[in-house]
Length: 382
Image (tube, rainbow, N blue to C red):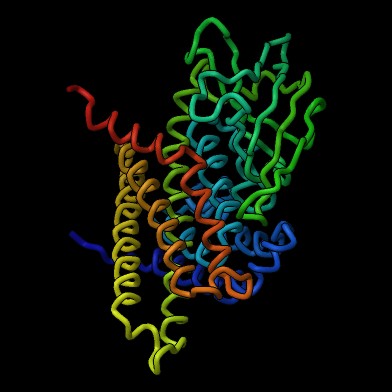
């Protein structure tokens, strides 16, 4: 078993780490406080190919593997979790389904501008009454001549306020249950009847926009159907498997930032005549944090490697996302505790890490749903 990274993977990781340290970390607090979109940082990632890492070069991507994606996203999220999730959604939730299920014409028209970083993509699945249960969605798409007419609202859509393109799930056959859901690629900038609704005020990842997508008799060309009619739920589940590796990587990056800052603070903070890092109570917190983060990293690397090998990775993606998210949240809580009163103030970034970590336990499948996915795979055939 060889854990050695290839030269290309090392370069990707090192490049992402440099961006995190030099560009993202110094600005993260500002963007968190102002809720501004980090346009310059995202542009830099686009120029490096990080907005479409695993997309072939012919469609504007970097043509790398998913292990490289996981490594890069971890480092970017270590610098700023908001930039991390913008990058994750672009890669996992938009580029992945268009690349996997789109035809040649769709890839050329809708994948290339997003994978190259010139435009942003998003994924419209969640609704007010359809989160963990996507089969209860109410957004509809009705064929009218050579156009699909879409009606409905999508909630909590990351990148929704900045995206030019979206993959949208909608009901095309109300009587077919889960087999009546289809996916569509929508050019949001050129679709009459589409508008951006409310942009949410959130606990964390404040530089990442989370918006409503509103469709009122929005008309798109018939050929914008993604894949086969009625295959939307299957596409959705496959897309979310890939997306969970992205969110797990985001969580791992947050956890690594927590550990870095906890170590630095513990070594410099003195109480009772010595640094608090000399006390066993602090050492155990740091040791547990580091051990759990390394375990999360191994789970994520395995899941990403399995995706590269084109083998079934649903269980492994769910395990990795669940464990990494729980680990990041636990690490952030302990990080605040290690910093004591300073951890509760905005003078240090630790409180931001705790706010940012929480969402990783919720989006792209709550960790309760992740446990159900793992159990379903374990019990299959029993």
